[in-house]
Length: 118
Image (cartoon, rainbow, N blue to C red):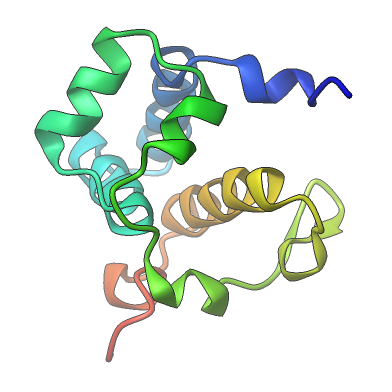
Protein backbone atom coordinates (compact mmCIF):
# COMPACT_ATOMS: atom_id res chain seq x y z
CA UNK A 1 0.00 0.00 0.00
CA UNK A 2 1.63 3.28 -1.07
CA UNK A 3 1.98 6.03 1.49
CA UNK A 4 0.82 9.60 1.21
CA UNK A 5 2.91 11.72 -1.15
CA UNK A 6 4.01 14.03 1.68
CA UNK A 7 5.89 11.07 3.22
CA UNK A 8 8.37 11.25 0.34
CA UNK A 9 8.93 15.02 0.65
CA UNK A 10 12.43 15.84 1.86
CA UNK A 11 13.04 17.68 5.10
CA UNK A 12 15.31 20.03 3.12
CA UNK A 13 12.35 21.02 0.92
CA UNK A 14 9.91 21.44 3.81
CA UNK A 15 12.19 23.29 6.24
CA UNK A 16 12.42 26.54 4.21
CA UNK A 17 8.61 26.62 3.99
CA UNK A 18 8.35 26.38 7.77
CA UNK A 19 11.02 29.07 8.20
CA UNK A 20 9.33 31.40 5.70
CA UNK A 21 5.98 31.00 7.47
CA UNK A 22 7.56 31.78 10.84
CA UNK A 23 9.62 34.72 9.55
CA UNK A 24 6.54 36.33 7.97
CA UNK A 25 5.19 36.56 11.50
CA UNK A 26 8.39 37.84 13.11
CA UNK A 27 9.78 34.52 14.35
CA UNK A 28 13.18 33.07 13.47
CA UNK A 29 14.84 30.04 11.90
CA UNK A 30 16.46 29.07 15.23
CA UNK A 31 12.99 29.00 16.78
CA UNK A 32 11.73 26.71 13.99
CA UNK A 33 14.74 24.45 14.52
CA UNK A 34 14.14 24.43 18.28
CA UNK A 35 10.55 23.27 17.72
CA UNK A 36 11.68 20.52 15.31
CA UNK A 37 14.39 19.34 17.69
CA UNK A 38 12.02 19.39 20.67
CA UNK A 39 9.53 17.19 18.84
CA UNK A 40 11.96 14.71 17.30
CA UNK A 41 14.95 14.56 19.63
CA UNK A 42 17.37 15.58 16.88
CA UNK A 43 20.10 18.01 17.86
CA UNK A 44 21.11 20.90 15.56
CA UNK A 45 23.80 18.78 13.88
CA UNK A 46 21.45 15.87 13.30
CA UNK A 47 18.81 18.15 11.80
CA UNK A 48 21.38 19.79 9.52
CA UNK A 49 22.69 16.37 8.47
CA UNK A 50 19.18 15.12 7.65
CA UNK A 51 18.60 18.18 5.48
CA UNK A 52 21.99 17.87 3.76
CA UNK A 53 21.36 14.18 3.05
CA UNK A 54 17.97 14.94 1.50
CA UNK A 55 16.18 12.60 3.91
CA UNK A 56 12.45 12.22 3.27
CA UNK A 57 9.91 12.76 6.06
CA UNK A 58 9.25 9.06 6.50
CA UNK A 59 12.94 8.37 7.09
CA UNK A 60 13.38 11.54 9.15
CA UNK A 61 10.73 10.48 11.65
CA UNK A 62 11.78 6.81 11.57
CA UNK A 63 15.33 7.86 12.53
CA UNK A 64 14.21 10.45 15.09
CA UNK A 65 16.31 9.89 18.21
CA UNK A 66 13.33 10.21 20.56
CA UNK A 67 9.92 11.66 19.89
CA UNK A 68 9.06 13.97 22.75
CA UNK A 69 6.67 12.26 25.18
CA UNK A 70 4.78 15.54 25.50
CA UNK A 71 3.89 15.41 21.79
CA UNK A 72 0.63 13.79 22.85
CA UNK A 73 -0.27 17.15 24.44
CA UNK A 74 -0.37 18.76 20.98
CA UNK A 75 -4.00 19.24 20.05
CA UNK A 76 -5.93 21.30 17.57
CA UNK A 77 -6.76 21.44 13.90
CA UNK A 78 -4.37 21.36 10.94
CA UNK A 79 -5.78 21.27 7.42
CA UNK A 80 -9.26 20.75 8.84
CA UNK A 81 -8.29 17.63 10.80
CA UNK A 82 -7.80 17.31 14.54
CA UNK A 83 -4.20 16.18 15.06
CA UNK A 84 -5.09 14.07 18.08
CA UNK A 85 -7.52 12.02 15.94
CA UNK A 86 -5.14 11.16 13.08
CA UNK A 87 -4.78 7.38 12.93
CA UNK A 88 -1.64 7.03 10.78
CA UNK A 89 1.31 7.48 13.19
CA UNK A 90 3.60 9.06 10.58
CA UNK A 91 0.94 11.50 9.37
CA UNK A 92 0.21 12.40 12.98
CA UNK A 93 3.88 13.22 13.60
CA UNK A 94 3.99 15.39 10.48
CA UNK A 95 0.83 17.20 11.55
CA UNK A 96 2.23 17.66 15.07
CA UNK A 97 5.14 19.48 13.47
CA UNK A 98 2.78 21.53 11.28
CA UNK A 99 0.78 22.49 14.37
CA UNK A 100 3.89 23.55 16.31
CA UNK A 101 5.03 25.77 13.43
CA UNK A 102 1.51 27.23 13.19
CA UNK A 103 1.62 28.08 16.89
CA UNK A 104 5.05 29.64 16.47
CA UNK A 105 3.83 31.76 13.56
CA UNK A 106 0.82 32.87 15.60
CA UNK A 107 3.13 34.33 18.22
CA UNK A 108 2.50 31.82 20.96
CA UNK A 109 5.19 31.86 23.68
CA UNK A 110 7.87 29.20 23.19
CA UNK A 111 7.23 27.67 26.64
CA UNK A 112 3.63 26.98 25.66
CA UNK A 113 4.57 25.66 22.22
CA UNK A 114 7.00 23.24 23.85
CA UNK A 115 4.32 22.22 26.35
CA UNK A 116 6.38 23.35 29.29
CA UNK A 117 5.63 25.39 32.40
CA UNK A 118 4.66 28.99 31.70
